[in-house]
Length: 94
Picture 1: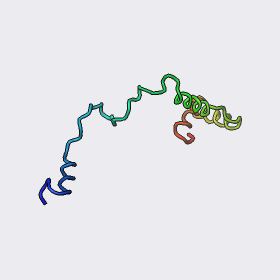
Picture 2: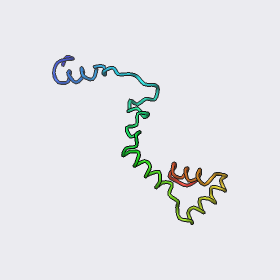
Picture 3: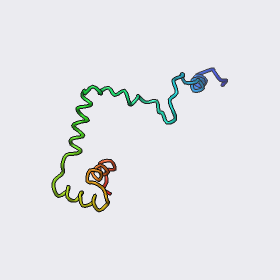
Picture 4: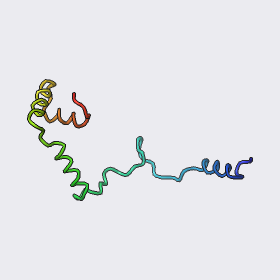
């Protein structure tokens, strides 16, 4: 079958077509939305949810857990807050 005729030719012709031009970003740009134009920068729903999640994450744990984290942080030469942050970021204990 010759190229350009029939259904297979149409599919091949479509695949060969160049994508529409768009502005190029820097290396590593995946074409997603900009991060600096946050829609909830004025304190909308997203800001409320974020502040609530932040409070829940940094909520003071029970005394036994806090003392265990403090002892482990001192043994590693870290502050309690830095050690807790590492636990939250990594999802596992150091």
